[in-house]
Image (tube, rainbow, N blue to C red; front, side, top):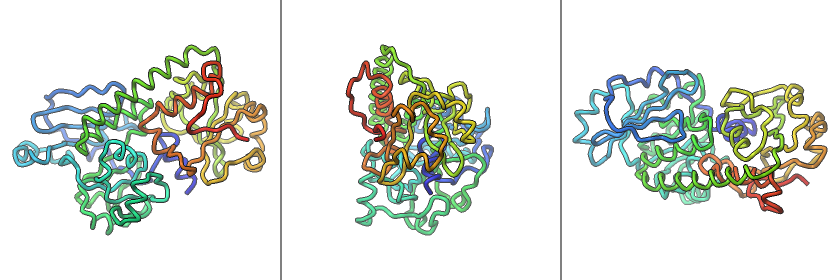
Length: 385
């Protein structure tokens, strides 16, 4: 379970339930109109949204198969559904979603958090992987009976999902795995492929799409604009520093060291904060499963080492060496520049960083550049004692 949590969220590209899509072709809808006004997406590389009279068409490019479409949605205003029926009737292979969504089941923790930030927490009626969701309104809703625990995302309790009569189910797609029964419920599956974006702002921009789904488009646009302003200001400030430390992330899990790809959101966050990521030259946007000895050949001279841990007790030096003795060769370990973040200690790390990357960027900038941020307090990462 720890491995699943680790992969699903931290890499922002290897994060969430292990349910996924069956085929990109089943979602193609060549009979959707090609005209309309394109809503400009400034950072997202995977999402295109075109506004038409009475509806919007949102297209998700397949991050695993270049030139293919993962999913195409037609968003129809619920109040306008009757007028739009003749137009949408011919879009047989597109997924029609009536907005605003009133009832949803969520398979992903960051999206629960986002809906709360947009003031749309009332939409969430069911969740999977409850033990991994550190969102107060969700936990409170479970206790009061307003939100249903729908089980494990790898094998959800379909009967509970059906009983909730959701308008949509938010899932996280992975390459080559099927949704199984979920594909046959007649409920739109919102494939949250935002984690496969190659930039943190690209992923965060998906909040605009999610805002459209739940009737909070204006709030989402404002929130994203705030994120961009904050992110750009921090990035600009970091450039004033004279320091540029070399950085390695994460730890060995079951004999494998999973590191973010060089073009992943995390890899670019490190660069934007003024750090030099050890795998910056890598071209992948997902995670890199590596043999520890091979990772060490690149990480040995790293000035800073960051990782996230599960559980209430923070790992110490002895714990790390018991886990993998090779850690002792890392420069950051020798010099005491190891930073750890507890995923269950009250700070909603995984929930926040997907859609507030500026908060994580600020943490990195404070650690990388003590000349600019002397004695600064960090939100997520703390220096290992």
